[in-house]
Image 1: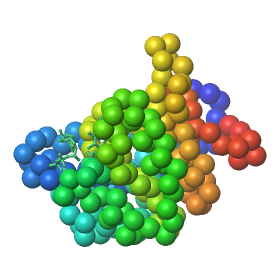
Image 2 (image 1 turned 180 degrees about the vertical axis):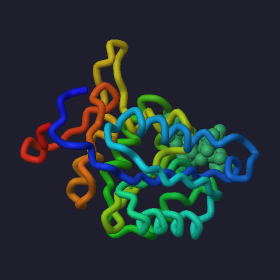
Image 3 (image 1 turned 120 degrees about the vertical axis):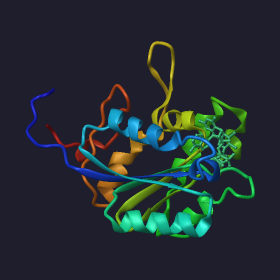
Image 4 (image 1 turned 30 degrees about the horizontal axis):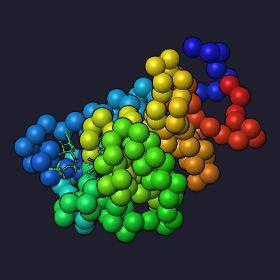
Amino acid sequence: MPHSTHEYAPVKIGIISISDRASSGDYEDKGLPALHDWLKRALHNPITFEPRLIPDEKQRISATLIELVDAGCSLVLTTGGTGPALRDVTPEATLAVADKEMPGFGEQMRQISLKFVPTAILSRQVAVIRAQSLIINLPGQPKAIAETLEGLRDESGAQLVPGIFAAVPYCIDLIGGPYLETRPEVCKAFRPKGAVRSR
Ligand SMILES: Nc1ncnc2c1ncn2[C@@H]1O[C@H](COP(=O)(O)OP(=O)(O)OP(=O)(O)O)[C@@H](O)[C@H]1O
Ligand SMILES: Nc1nc2c(c(=O)[nH]1)N[C@H]1C(S)=C(S)[C@@H](COP(=O)(O)O)O[C@H]1N2
């Protein structure tokens, strides 16, 4: 542990797994554990999680996003329901509660995911700001969660494409949330020089 001159700020994070079959018990949900484990690995900050497992229903998704933002989540990550299937409505439900769209996140996720699968082009994921919360859709494949958050490395571990989480801490600074600090071996967060606080 480096000598610390300040405590890590506590953060509340909403994690939502959106899947008809996992929410009805047809199969085991792997979305929430994947989100939880990746965030625990990536962040130094003490995290209070608000987990939800819900079906692919637009009203239900929007209501859950509003509930978690109102509960004080600075970040809300969803997984599932971003594809073209008739039941896939996560992006619409997210845009319905948006104050602002943040298109760079979806663009970057599709860039990353195209290095893994050609069908990444089918993911319509969006990110938005609502009040003082950043909401980001991730694809439903559990392995896609770490892939998009962390990006792509070569065999030596050198970063080939940065994951989207690199931009999340500074985005949360800008909307007045807690100062997030990442473990660089998992995700090297980027902030402009003037925004970096020394430990
Ligand atoms: N929560 C989950 N837990 C485990 N595997 C999942 C989960 N969500 C999705 N998957 C896997 O990823 C695939 C693509 O996810 P997608 O969100 O498109 O699901 P889907 O096919 O619409 O079905 P459902 O909504 O019932 O999970 C699924 O077919 C499934 O194999
Ligand atoms: N990183 C990554 N992104 C991915 C995938 C994947 O396996 N890895 N699967 C794709 C597929 S097959 C689909 S249909 C879309 C939408 O997935 P969703 O409906 O599960 O959200 O995400 C895509 N994005």
